[in-house]
Length: 265
Image 1 (cartoon, rainbow, N blue to C red):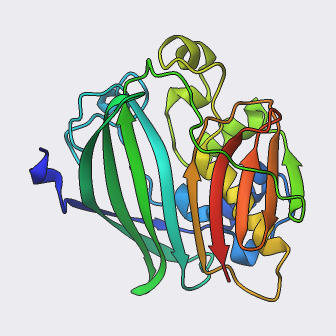
Image 2 (cartoon, rainbow, N blue to C red):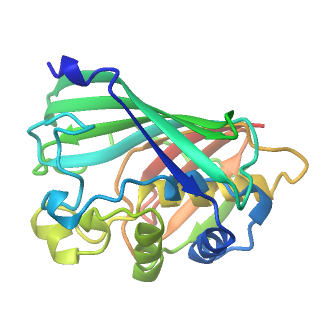
């Protein structure tokens, strides 16, 4: 199914401006190193689709680069990222993307699911800077939230707490040109996709996590980071980030894990 979308490719170019870097730091609301910002690539080379080429949810209509999967809800399930070189400001960047895998699964709790693996590569002057395998999941929006795996808080890890507000969500959506309505349209998020409030962007949380990790290890550069989103994070609720021993877990204030990840220098 959807075999014609396997190995489908697209590419895009952009320029890393000082203005974008400043806005990215302002959005994260922390004094991170502008010469080694992690997660900035998610704000680059985004498709500039016309409004009439978007679905009701704000995503680009399916059937172009993405297969026409007939399930209403799309989520960013996980990513595995490799950093090879620091991005250079005021220079162009090219992204090449390829759909590597499309898999249908049937879950007792969730019903029909489709998982798509997309490999993204980012180049500057033909030098590979970043590679990422991103997994998207398509599912039925009527599914209730569940957290099947138990995670425990490691008290040996350093804790950082962030409370994302609507301004932070808006700014990140604008920077990443992400028009998915669950991040800014509360009525839509609740009534159409069955969330309880506005949803914090997974890559926003991952950007905060990666830059906090890097800021605590200034003598080494982060080389690998992988994460899995396990539950939605909601606006105005605490993100309790535990970092240490090459692992990271992000809990909400009810001690349920929202994101689990690993990293290497």
